[in-house]
Length: 78
View 1 (tube, rainbow, N blue to C red):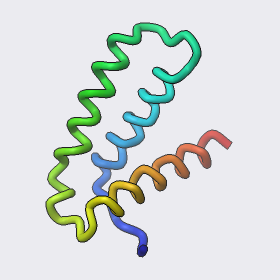
View 2: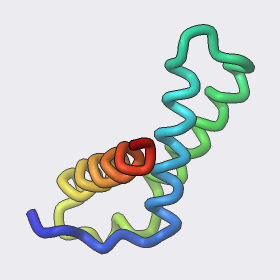
View 3: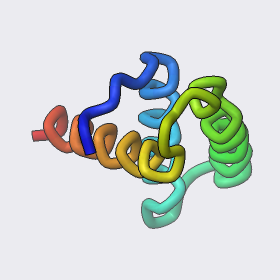
View 4: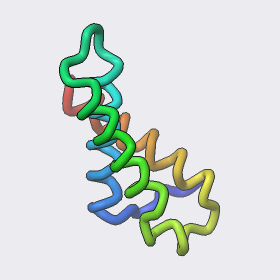
């Protein structure tokens, strides 16, 4: 699949979702209620983002977004 040019706000939301998920998955996370609420809010924003109405293959595009943001996060961490 060719690289997709995702909107910046969608990429930022996915990155925030990943960070929140990682914080919640960490051993003994602090304030799990707030993290769960944030994860739910970000999930809703990701799912209903207007970009998905224009995506040619929504499931493939969602997967690519997740993989792209994870890869960028790994590069920044290195």
